[in-house]
Length: 197
Image 1: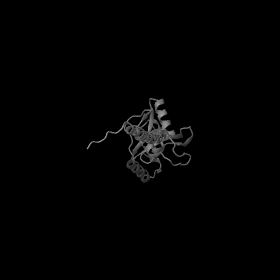
Image 2: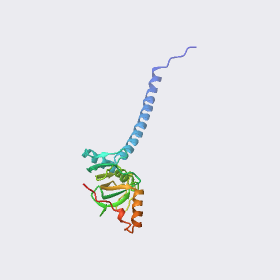
Image 3: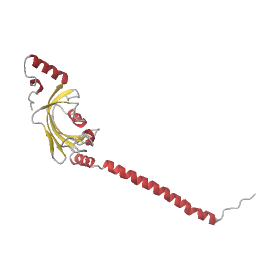
Image 4: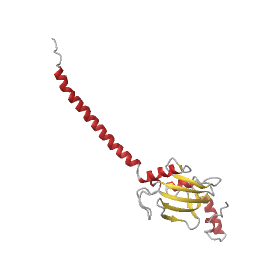
């Protein structure tokens, strides 16, 4: 039994359907790509990301860690660096990117290295004794989407930090205990020796 060949008219009628189906598929793919591209653009062009990218590209001495903390060495120190369990004596000033100061230490402040926001703690662990650094801490390494006191949500925190001294917390506790036993002021051991520059 012989099969009759399709006429050119039947094949021509299917061509517009095929082109129409291809057009619909391409339209859907382009729309999905545009939606994904818009989401990517918004995620990668938030004000904090734009600021940090511009900040780093404007000054080649600014270093960015794997976590996204940016820092600049203002004064180099020497020697070992503190760890999470150490207590550090620091002077600091914290600002927003618009220059508004939200916190400043009036005198050396003892601080357990592992206790502040993650970006501040990470920065302290980069600093040898006697150094001064500037940190730019992105929101995810600070307070994120929470407003804290005078700090708005999603803020980049800018800190100038002087690391005067640090020691293991256990050594500090022992020194405080000895001072109390000798009748000295309990606060005397919590003050660092003057830094020599």
